[in-house]
Length: 223
Image 1 (cartoon, helix red, strand yellow):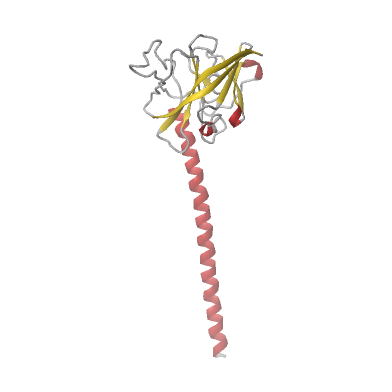
Image 2 (cartoon, helix red, strand yellow):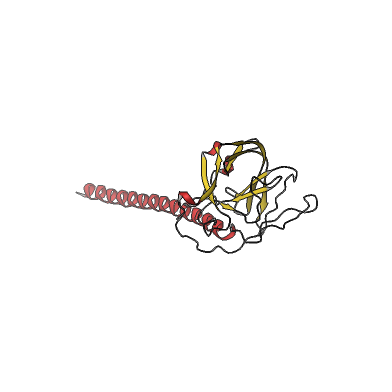
């Protein structure tokens, strides 16, 4: 009788220990998922707060040898609203074959020309049909529904981007990629004798910087 009592006590301890182990494993799994969700959320918030362009992003004339062209930030309005841009509103399209990207952009003066809704034309850009101009497009990265540039980190020099505008297909080749610290301004370094496409987004896995992609025109054809 005494032996049976002892065996019963041991089994009860084992059950308690096993239960505690299961609870600890469950807690660790839950904590990991929660922390990953918080990380993703903070990255999206960082994009929303720091990656919005103002109406005075760049001066009209800047000597590239003296100082960079700048893009300034301002607080985003209408944050979190759903994208309500219809197909007919697009005035052109941006295509990046390497990352299977294809999306329209709206008129620079449209209220939908906003990084919270679309890829966004910086207001002081020159359009692709302007000789030696710089067409600048900004977009979110991260994990949100408006993170249209989330795969740009895969791009390298010599990769191509295409702009369709006014029945002309402009093909650009990336010549430079660089990071800039988030200070409220973006320096755009380019060759002023070339037609340029500049893409700007937040840097993957680095909340302190933004990435600038400089691409130069290599081909122009009607479509």
